[in-house]
Length: 439
Image (cartoon, rainbow, N blue to C red; front, side, top):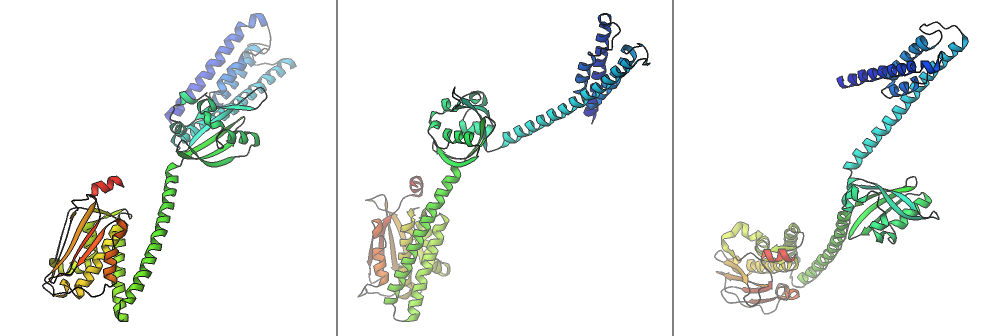
């Protein structure tokens, strides 16, 4: 508020100074002009005063009219007007004074509005994440667009171009970026917009990055907006790959379930047995999928796969299990195979092996293969259960175990010593740090 009042007072003071100066100049010209109604020295004073605001302009106009009337309109040194010419001269000066102040105020308001708009535009562009570049057409002797000159670039555009304003403004597009001449979304597109006046929108790749761009005509040039959408494009590509992977996995799951249901039915003697076996295997697959979803199906830890698969038995009878081994990371395919293998072994142990008696125990341990560092050997050993004999015919579970790791170059050895079943599995694995680096 105080600042506004101070500006007004300064404007009024300036107006009075300008009018006083004009009056002094007019007195100096009294000799050459003699008794004359000439008031030209007051017009610059009125114009200058009006640029300080309408109040300062009005004050200058009123004071100037009074001074001219009193000092320079015959009879001088008097407010009398004795002839028609003097009256019309005073009236004309009054009208011109009002017009000058009015036009100057209108111009000042327009300039102020433009200045505020320019300031607003600059502020918005300074914080915008979208690059904005204004080009001016550079034409040859025939009028054809030969190049485009940089006239403006906001901070976001300068960041994309990795240059500052001093390095870019005034330069030519084709001099700075020769490949723009042949790129369909750059110079040819800009020239087409210049020629047709129709705005254009496009996405294009340049220098390994993707951009979304809009181009519109601006007088004899174009304004171009550009935004780096490389991250979005990579996300879209990744989403497509993930969708393809999901489709592939869903097909595999359906195929596995269908095969599992078919083979389970063949080995079941009743509907109830078929239902129990199938549900158990489906629950095992579901637990494995839940475990792998945490790591986005990239890998899993052997310890987690073992404990997740055996969770139904570990919770009530954890003391009957000994689980030990070093940290090992395995692929999602190996994790699923290990899950199904352990499910078949645990189901068999509940029905016929160590988990069918209160004294039975199961020892599960794994280690890295000394002959091949990228393979792991896991052993399942049952003790304390009933005396067993090798089955006369391999069932679905036995066939599943034998084939579980074949696709990954592993193998399974299933034996039936009288003191309890023993299964040795060999599959690919690596320390967690190594697999993370590979991934």
